[in-house]
Image (cartoon, rainbow, N blue to C red; front, side):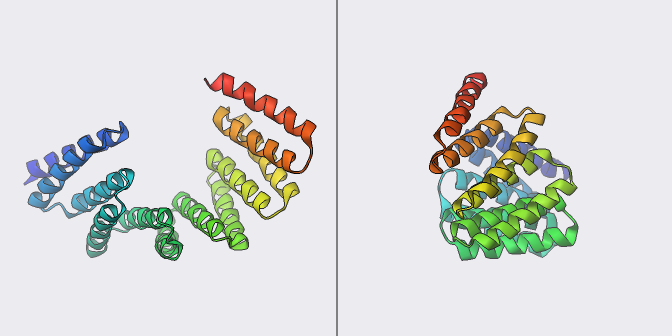
Length: 242
């Protein structure tokens, strides 16, 4: 029994490696072998994890209905065994799937369930990530005030955990949102804050995205000299990144 449990874990790990390499058919092969082995071993926690992993690969392949089927199997098993950590991951995966399917009400339903669990468990980094996802769904629905509230809550959590990478990303998202809301000055303020963090942490790609957003905003506002100055920096960073 123990040997089969170990074999199941090994097969699952190989599947994860193939997925990371982009070899999705190989990943499916090993995940399905892991699934069989974990069923035989009675490893319900491992089984739920592999079901979720299969859902991720089918999502990567664009097979959304198949992905949802595996996610729901994983969620049902996680609920049965009380695996709250696994549930938060699967609920978020389902939320993202529904978002990609443009079914935003379902996406919000699953993200809110994930958020409630994360709050109960005190998982602040996960809370921040889920709040960001909810904020982006609200943005797609043009519920801009709700989106801003979620992103600001996410930013506070990232600041509390001193996660500078995600602070910068969330500030950038707030900048994009403010631009969409017709608030260019507020957008520039968020972009400037994000840029300071990206520069301090030497994140060239992040800097390029922010500078490009700032240049587009300045161009839309008719400030062409400033837009040109920013675009020169964007081009310089593109050369450096290559």
